[in-house]
Amino acid sequence: MTTDNPDRRCRRACLAALCAAAALAAALGAQPARANPFETTLANGLRVIVKEDRRAPTVAHMVWYRAGAMDEVDGTSGVAHVLEHMMFKGTRKLGPGEFSRRVAEAGGRDNAFTSLDYTAYFQQVPKARLGEMMALEADRMANLVIDDKEFGNEVRVVMEERRLRTDDKPHAQVHERLMATAFQAHPYRRPIIGWMDDLEHMTAADARAWYRQWYVPNNAYLVVVGDVDHEAVFQLARRHYGALRPRALPLRKPREEPAQKGIKRIVVKAPARLPYLAMSWKAPVLRDVDSDRDAYALEVLAGLLDGHDASRLVRELVRGSRVAVSAGAGYDATVRGEASFILDGTPAEGRTVAELEQALRGAIERIQNEGVGVGELERVKTLTIAHETYKRDSMFAQAMEIGRTEAAGHNWRSLDVMLQKIRGVTAEEVQAVAKKYFSDDALTVAVLDPQPPPAEAPAAPARPAGVRH
Image 1 (cartoon, helix red, strand yellow):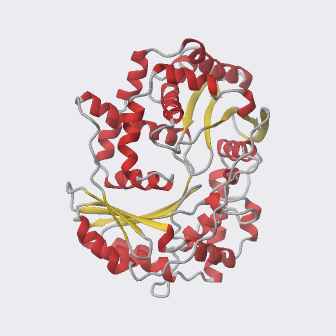
Image 2: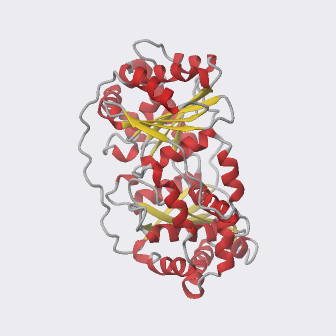
Image 3: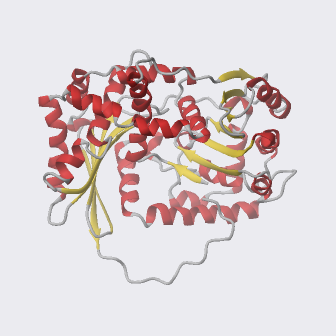
């Protein structure tokens, strides 16, 4: 079980997937291939999306809930992720751990992940066992048992997870503080894993309330990809999910971030060998797939800066001036909330954070002043064909693509349009967004100030057996 908080490499992969599909189609002299998913909506509001892929006798079964960390309120940060853990702790029919045991007995694997925008659960199993997976998921959608003792044990596991993944990781601390500073009002300021104080004071009642609010069929959608017939899957879904009752959902109020009125800077002190720099600019979100041109141009800009091993930041800052040992860029336009364009890096030995910041700014300024060549623009769209090829071999990756697109508020049918829009981005559009969105008024800068390592502490207690991450 994981928190899904895409860093710059995950954001870069979003561009890679889009560019690769478009570039592959262009290389073949054809339009991007039409996806074949089929869709229906059950009477209780549960949407069912099926993509047939008959290359192997397996199936990926994913349930996505439109509730993530951004739906939390102050004082209960982390509850979405804690509830994800509790979904494996038993129902009225199954004891703790029995869900995953049954998936394993079916010859499959399962897990789950929580993001800012959604929570998702999946199983990959032989196609003959799909009905059993639906029965298991439908059971815990309606009949979860949140025992006080089990909750107490599991929230301590999550606290330890926070220590390992954030508190003991200097770069993770920087990104957590960067978001908490960049966003004043928007819920993206809170970490998915939750603030430690909130976890320490969280109760089983908080998790039960979250479950009652959001875990209903009319706030979920089912994605199935594999060696299946879509009509047969629809029938299975009606049989196993159809009897679940919908409930009224809480009103989702707008979560607009106030306009930033000047640069923000913070310093994070943590044990580390080298400093680290992260710079985040407010950026537009893709809302209208057909008309929002700037989002596509920013995706391409991120790819030009950090889309492959010969991209500008690697070529100019790491191998060229050697001001950095690493440097990257990231932007994800397909989110429910607010978007950020991030540049980050680690200065080389003997170089300063100030020098690295100047170099990162210089990379943007060169595009602002000189633009980009047509050849360079095309390379970022063609060097990622392998990524798309590999993705098409994975049923899970196909299900993820559909699910994440839906979570951002776009219909899976818009995927082809997105590919075509990325393919059509011009050099002039890339230069225009470089000029438009990188002012200091929209910038937040976070710096890691490396500290000496602390005195050796006693070994931490062993993690409880069977913890899933």
